[in-house]
Structure formats: C-alpha cells, structure tokens
Image 1 (cartoon, rainbow, N blue to C red):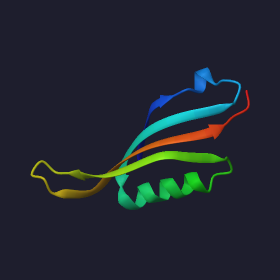
Image 2: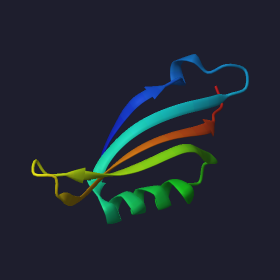
Image 3: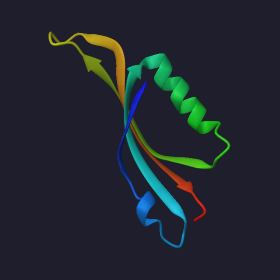
Length: 79
C-alpha cells in the first residue's frame, strides 16, 4: 500500500481538538482492506468520514488487481 496525505489541518487544530486527514492510497485489494482494518482497530479513536474505493485499469481498459482508496478521517488530538 502506498499512502499519500492529500490534505490535513494538523497545523490549524482549533479548540475542539479535531484533526481531519485526507489520504489517497494505492495497492492490491487485500492489502487495502488490511489497511482499513488496522485503522479501525487502532488504539486511537479514528472516525472514517468518507471512503471511496475504485478499481484501476490497464491502458486497454481491463481491470487490475490494484485499487485506489480515497479516505477522509477525523481524530481527536491533544495539543
């Protein structure tokens, strides 16, 4: 799985201590599912606000074993 943070407000956390992080990930389907499972079973309270899973295609339009995941999460942090 190759993660890439697309946006976050970690440098602008307000009084409610809520951090929002958006990520794009690419990997094979089983590894993406493992990543989501690890997020859900984390020791931190992480709320998955939005999740979009899309297949990837070859140049001739055939699907591959890889998928793209776009995910937005929220978590509470202490300053």
